[in-house]
Image (cartoon, rainbow, N blue to C red; front, side):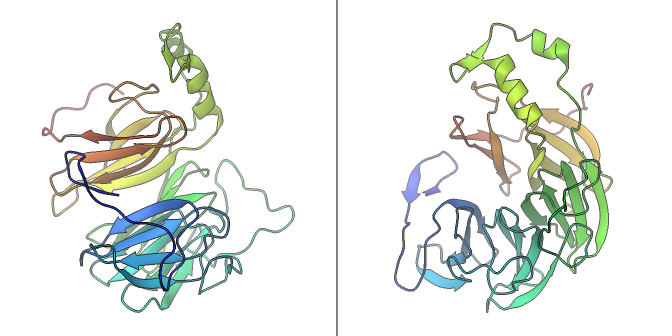
Length: 304
């Protein structure tokens, strides 16, 4: 679905077509610097990536449905969660995270494989018996759910079930990580919402649901200035958008909470920023909606 910034429908397409296999469950989507649209799928057998022009005409498919050979496969993905094209190199970065546990990079013009890496810039591997993630600092990606590349060549990876934000160079060298929201809900804050309901259920129950799922960083987005000074993080365990200083990863502020009213979230899943700095969020599960947050300028950060 193609919408204008007021939410009006302009264009739409979908389903299998001549020369390509449509995803069973559409998931990641990106419009690149040349106006091409990229789509990934997270359903069983969605091992392909699709490229269209802005009118919905098919351009290219990378991989084939039901063909994944695992984390060392350089031709197919495995239920990829997100896609992003880096203009400086015209390369497609893929968060290959629902079926695999890696970032993989392709040439956005030819579809040729370029490189791939695991959680610490190492070679990605398939799980083996007894290979359980360390919850404090997992050795491997644990549902790599988002990937974005900044203007200065930093790759920001949302390691959702790893509950951390990862930063790499465009070549896959690990730079740093930020653990996020590994705490339990504040009992006092939950008590304040006793008696409230959202989506026909007690809000306290919904807060418990997202907190005990132990998943945090879902997607990231950049501020529109050339330096991309700020990094926005869609955080799942608290259902909030965090605002970070991108260079230092210092948390400057946050907004949102569990609920179904405007400005609240359940389940916050995806996010993108436009050239004016407005944010668009998407909720799944019973949330099932998109919201737009209009940039109004800068203000001092409140208490955290």
